[in-house]
Image 1 (cartoon, rainbow, N blue to C red):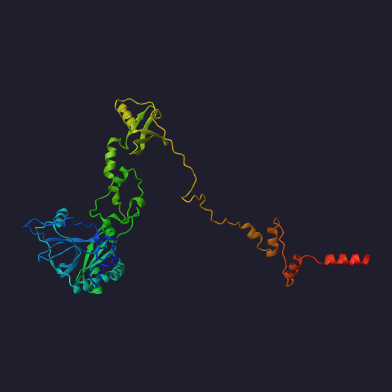
Image 2 (image 1 turned 120 degrees about the horizontal axis):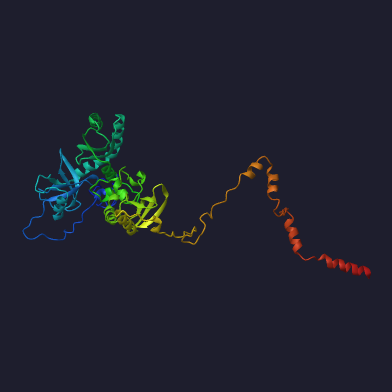
Length: 428
């Protein structure tokens, strides 16, 4: 996903993700091509390819001609031709692989291609960095102006030109929007040339980025460049429930990943009868309710008794279809149905530490009945009633001389022998 502060540092390197010149955590290097021909030399007498690939904000890449024969390498910041003025971008690919990329994107390298003026100076980088810092506060103000004019549109992003002379406002809208007054308000509020550019909802999600339901970054913001149409038939072929909340992505459209495995499902469905298959039996006609593509099973139910399903193998279904074509009805589906034993699930839990109970640390909830009954009573009486079955507590009162008494109890009694001696003397 895109950096929110992907401006340049003092040395001219991007500082958005603090990756020392390359942005590896967002779409700044979206679908970056590795130059595996960089260590190879060209044959003698062959001139290097004069076009280079340059990246701008949010993964936007364009091709420019190096007419000045500048020595460029990946990561250099250059000033390119723009209308009007110039733009600032970063070189992402040079050499013969640029020709391959231009052919892939249907760009004629022999036609008119904008050129590179020079390597960016420190003054160019400072102006570019200052213009990029204005984009976020401008986006907030632009949305306020659009809401004030009650336009059914959303300003998704703003991109300044490298020289700061023009700002491109990217927006999304369901219908056509008359933004003539909006452009006048933008020009007076921001004092710059304004260009409006409408993008689709998928392109908006690709520019903004995010995390998908799979837990990974959005495909459109990391590697996906071509957005093919996705239909609900792709979900039907894959036996998915048509739940819009699960099938829709962050752009509000159907997820692009529905097309990833569609070809595999289509190949598997070639040997399986259609969902509209109807089987004729003496007991009545049966209609297909469900298909398990990978296990090769089909579920059928009689018309009028859709609550009871019968599981048949694909080979058995084909056999019944062949008999029906010969106008032969089978006796019943029960003769062909199979039973699938469900594995017994133990309702026990044990984690890696061998602790069985998840609620062992939870305190039991106290009932409110005792609180209501004891609310109007004295706390002493309520306490006695609670502890009627408990053993009586022995309360020992500590006095200043209690320690001395305890010490005297521990000492042996010396008065006994003396009394006995006195008695002996009296008898004498």
